[in-house]
Amino acid sequence: APVSAPAPAAAGNRKKGKKERRREKERAQPGYKPPEQPQKKERPQRPGRGETVGQPNPALLTANMKKAYTLKELFTTVSKYESQLNHIHLSAAWNSLGRLVGTRAVERNWFTTHAAALETLVQLSIETVSDFQKSTQIRARELTNIAHGVAKSGGGGNKSGELMKGLARAIVRRLGDCNSQELANAAWAFSKADYLDEQLFEHLAEAVRRHMESDDFAFNSQELTNIAWSMATASHHDAPLFGAIARAVERRL
Image 1 (tube, rainbow, N blue to C red):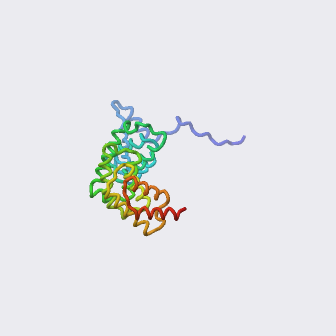
Image 2 (image 1 turned 90 degrees about the vertical axis):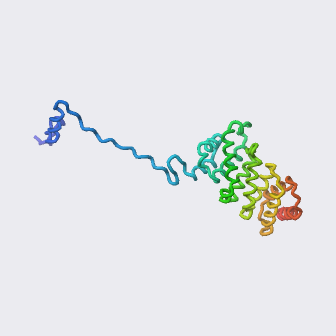
Image 3 (image 1 turned 90 degrees about the horizontal axis):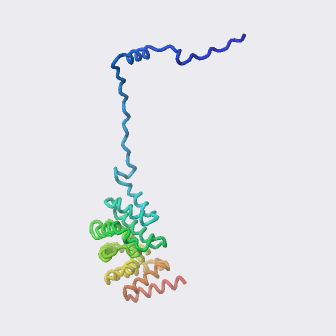
């Protein structure tokens, strides 16, 4: 008959080693206490790059504000992280607020529903743009975005004048850095918000003329339209500027 391989021994019949027999004797002794197993310590979660414990990544916070789909989402972010908001976050928040308020889905009494968060946003913006040291660190783009968002949303409320005054001073210091879009947006924003300071519009008109003198096509048609409307709304009668705008429009026909 063929010889088959021996079957493996059953687990219960295997021969026990010295250590195992010793442990069995110890467990059989009265008053035996099993040794304590070492506890695995949980490692504290490390913050992501650019984050500290309890604080979000600044760039991610900016992205969340820019991508906010609803006013509730935007104002929740503002309220939750108000102590960490800088001028870039404020610019993103106002830009999104202007965009969201312009949609059909927004409720009519949104400024009442989100009054507390809106007040926080307005007050933080006033403090930031009115502080000389802080405002000098803000680029023209952020300043004009804030002004445009305030005007488009109407979110400044009874502090709109104070906020626009601080923005006007800061933007005048940055006019040399403004591109055509930023100049057009600034002029439109102050006219829309009914902040019609004569000296401000003189500075804006001068900056627009400089741009047009350096480049005949510095402004597109929409920007030229916004500037003309803004100057007319502010009753800023600048014949050379309106003449330059008219010639620029003719070249685009």
